[in-house]
Length: 478
Ligand SMILES: Cc1ncc(COP(=O)(O)O)c(C=O)c1O
Image (tube, rainbow, N blue to C red):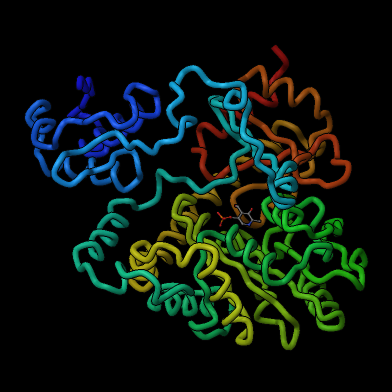
């Protein structure tokens, strides 16, 4: 029997896998009749110059899956039991095979239809990016911390299963960190480590909402939360955001969950005053609803004292706190956390275990060191100074170039601010012509967005580039 396989020693796939794949494809492609004898492992190994063990591994898999049959004493054969349908030559599909398979998707899948992702084009200056400056993160140090744990090869980092709620050291480090920075008093056992705050929101939706339940979201607000609750079948109630944060009057007695970003509202950037925080907690207490406090960028505050986290003010109200390292470190890290009341620890741990067992432990261990050894605080201090300078450049240029006609909001904290320009169309055209990506806040509204409101993400762009971009936005149309 002629077996023209093409083995590629430079390919990523191991040789036994290539042998298996190619035999399988050849059989399914109708190149061999049923019952045909195939070369022995010894003959095949000799013909292709590979080890017999390699060939045996591939043959065993083909036998196990029913493509080959091994007859004791007489050799190996293409299975005589392969159904006709299987042996139809590949490349000549029947009409039935040409049509895509009819797979019925769940209701959840149909509700994902509205999820839009911000498309970032490869423009030269991207003012729409709300992101930390990755070029300033101490990656050499981070590499050292990760390798330290790789070298130790300790079972608590490499074994699976014992720590669904997170690495013990990291949970303790987070509890200590938020006690210092956010006045949150909690035990490490109340900290559940998750894969970014997006997973925190997902677990909250699973545990706190049933399909048809009402979830209140800020308007405008964070699409990552809004779309997620809708995908889980919740009905959304919009809370219009004014200068004092989201309106509590908009809530109804049916609202079960209220998602808020009190430190630096996304996207407007306003911070919720203490009185509004207390009012919302009072409302949640009375209505037995849960406040989901999404504290995604509170570490960067440039003016005014930081207000206490709602979690720290809760006294009897149901508050779940969500934090993330995406903005203080880097987004690819995918580590965030929840702080939950004692009685919810079991449910959140079970939900996390069900979702993905646990977040990768190696990075959690490195992150625990990063916090315990003071690197996180130092990095935040450095970045706060840097981002504040960049924010000041934006404010200066907006003031100088556009005068009192522009309204800036949300500049006291975070990685972005919002601007209302008097003439939106002219600004958009100028940005387009000059290769500047500028996004309106329209994507963040459930209802009608204002016409001329834009986001300016300043943290990841150097001062000189910011100056050039903003001057060019203000310049005369070319
Ligand atoms: C309101 C809000 N929550 C959370 C996040 C971060 O999400 P993650 O932790 O999943 O990266 C962001 C993104 O910056 C955000 O704007």
